[in-house]
Image (cartoon, one colour):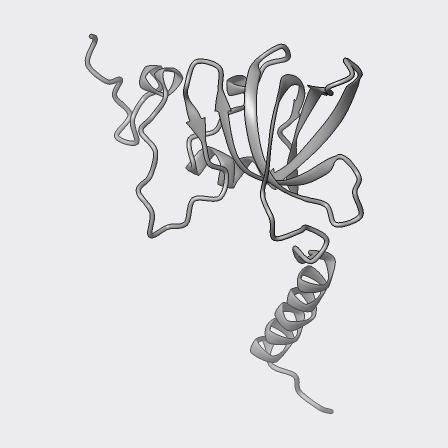
Length: 152
């Protein structure tokens, strides 16, 4: 009888799974390299995996409204970059910079968003870049040590 070690079975499973994950995730080739900047009002913030979507109503020059979708990473990456679902409630005015879709549809890859109050949100900060400061909402949460921060 042929004996198959647990390590062989585990390695085979890991390799099979990793190829499925790599195949399931798309690249960025559908987005143009140029950047556009649009002003609008948040319609919805879909804080979901594997990608989040910031849905924004943009008023055109003729007064009509076009709904744009701006793709970003999932909630885990957004939270590490200081972006929370509560940062973009419906009705929030903002300016969004994005790489638009090449096919001309009203969507793009979210690069930066600046709310009307001047707070800037960068969904794709790299580990080598400075991490954002915690927002006011974060200060009420217990720290990793399990104690609440000092009262202000």
